[in-house]
Every structure is written in C-alpha cells, then in structure tokens.
Amino acid sequence: FFDLPLPNSKKSLEIDTFSTSTTKSSLLSKSKPPYDCIVNSMVINCVTTPSKRGRMLSMCYHQLRPGGVLFLILPKLCLTQSKHMSRKYLEEILREGIGFEILNDGKRESPKLAFFVLRRPLDGGDDSGDVSVRRQ
Image 1 (cartoon, rainbow, N blue to C red):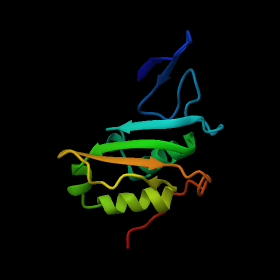
Image 2 (tube, one colour):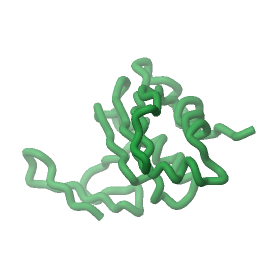
Image 3 (tube, rainbow, N blue to C red):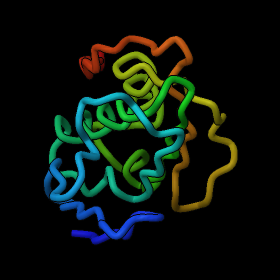
Image 4 (cartoon, helix red, strand yellow):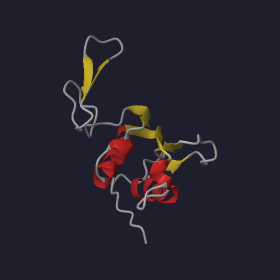
C-alpha cells in the first residue's frame, strides 16, 4: 500500500493497491465526484482480470466531476501484442462502454507507452458505469 500525506492535514490516506478500499478515507466511495483530474499511470495493466480493469476505469469515471480529466498511461505492448485488446477496441470501451470523451489523437506517444487523455462529459454522460462493449 501507499501511505500518502494529505495537504494541510495531519491524517494520511492509505491505499491498498490490491483492494478497492482505503483505511482512512473513502477515496472510491460513491459520494459526490470531487476530482478535477486523476492520473492512472502504469496501473491498469497490473489489474488481474478484464472485469476488474473495467471496474477500475468505471470508478475513475465516477470519481471525476463533469468536465474532469483522466490521464491514462499503459505499456504500448498491452495494445499491440495482446490477442484480446487493441487501441481501437480500448477506445471503444472508453467511449461507448464507460462514457469518456477521448481528447488526444494518439499521435504523440513514446515507443513504449500509450497515452490517453480522457474527459468525463460536462453533461455527465451515461452514469450507468456499464462496461458491456463486446467485440464483434
């Protein structure tokens, strides 16, 4: 886990990276979305199952205020060497399955990393959080 000091506070936020719970704060609660920005860098590729990865992305969506931005960074190999995932399919999941707007065009990438700049629509988009996009 990480023990992160909170600004202007004597408390810290303990995040167990193998769980969706926290011990001193309710970061992933279903309360009012308070965050303007979330950075998910080299995290989603470590989540063990597709359903848990979808749940993580959905929780990121719901923790952003309308208009908030998610920076998603993952190894490019996850999109180019996988039998089950491609950049096009991930973009479909992000847009149609979760509700994000994709702000970047994918042209500025490193040789080893894929970058996504995603925004929760100002109208809130579809709040269902249903990650049910199926490849045909």
